[in-house]
Amino acid sequence: MISGTHLKRKLYQYFTQRAGLQKYRRGWLKGDCPSCGENKWGVNLTLMRTNCFRCKYNDKPIDAIMLLENLVTNNEVFKVLKAFEGIDFYEEAVELYQLKENVTLPEGYKNISRGDSLLACSARNYLIKRGFDIKELAKAGWGYCNKDKYFGYIIMPFYRNGRLVYFNARRFLGDGPRFNNPLVEDFGLGKSMLMYNSDALLMYDRVFIVEGLMNARTIGDNAVSMGGKKVSNYQINLLIKAPVKKYIIGFDHDGYEDALELAIKLEPFKRVKIMPFKDSRDINDLGRKKSLLITAKQRYLNYNELILLKNG
Ligand SMILES: [Zn+2]
Image (cartoon, rainbow, N blue to C red; front, side, top):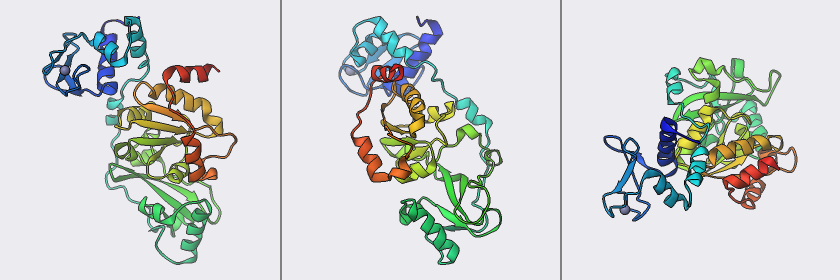
């Protein structure tokens, strides 16, 4: 049973995140009317009433959800609301971090399309072998470094709202660790806050969610990488709040459980499908074409189907 303030919070989440209402004036939310479809419908959760200024539709919030979701009983409404369980918002947590101003790429960084030195050619060859298109990588700001600590490393920048916030470094030449990523803390970020290509969330209706950034880049500009199969609350928050309509989760073969877990959290807000992988080959191993083919054969799943898959 849901009650009191808890119910109000659930209702607020439902109307703002699923029904797409916007904050209006004096405690009112405003959005599309479930009866006439006009953007003249107000919902007030303090007064627990709704009102359409066009067609006078004024069912109570719970009844409105029944209409919106095509449900028959109150209990079904509560079930829908309960699906929001565990998804609270972390705007406050974001404020704790002070993104560093003037983040720059390391000294000696060169865009991947530039230069004809042996180092430049070897960097490009490495990426071409992995199936990448140099022009696309150049646009995404990928490069190599010819100096110091990052000599022989591919540099992969993270942008947020078009601003550089972080980068990853992957070795393609010489000795040293395979990855040489700078400390996130040095960039004023929390580790759980990183999401490669997060700006895709503002630009595309359909976005792929994958583990590593090589996988994201393989899919293209409409893919984000979580940096692993464990998705943080901060990341989930971003995914839910984004105007994206459809998510396709493409975690590796051993991350299927985690993909389901994430899908269940996203489903109340978005349409979700999961890419199945038969073996340990991931998106980058398979390449974009095959990965998209796998995706096309899947359909979007509803909450019950996801729960069945989880229990099966
Ligand atoms: Zn109306």
